Image 1 (tube, rainbow, N blue to C red):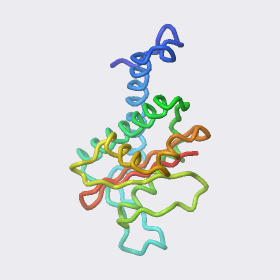
Image 2 (spheres, rainbow, N blue to C red):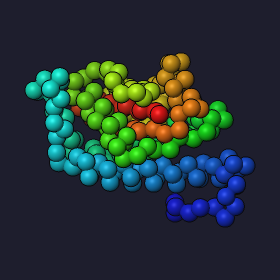
Image 3 (tube, rainbow, N blue to C red):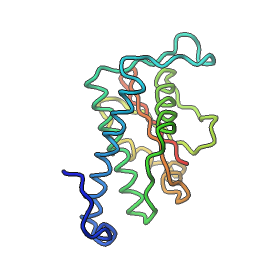
Image 4 (tube, helix red, strand yellow):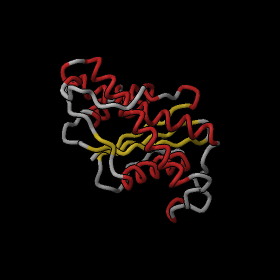
Length: 181
């Protein structure tokens, strides 16, 4: 699908099919940005351990084919969040700046490394989930959050205008952290 802006820029607001097309283009763009960030921030490197995490906790990037699959999932998560917000008449969220994306990614890697979901000390709203690799997809991840009123409330909070999406893999599980701000 080519990344083009509609001639009538208000069409996505009136036509659900045009809105889905626009979301598809946005998710492709988000995936490309995520892949570039992955390459820039972590290709072939491990995340240095935090002193509080212990010396044996260093995230190791998965194989390149798994990284591509994770980036596709990141795009699917972003698109599913946008679709859900649109269905509920909540304004869309934009992907945060590179630093926020990096922080969300770092938190997902930390969770994968430690094998536990913990709150972040940062002043952001964050939701997390981990699923077995074989059952993980963008929609499965968002669906898991929709089974929790607290997670759903964070996703649908109209005060959140940006999101950073982190996704990591370790021990046959996919770990996702989305930070809203």
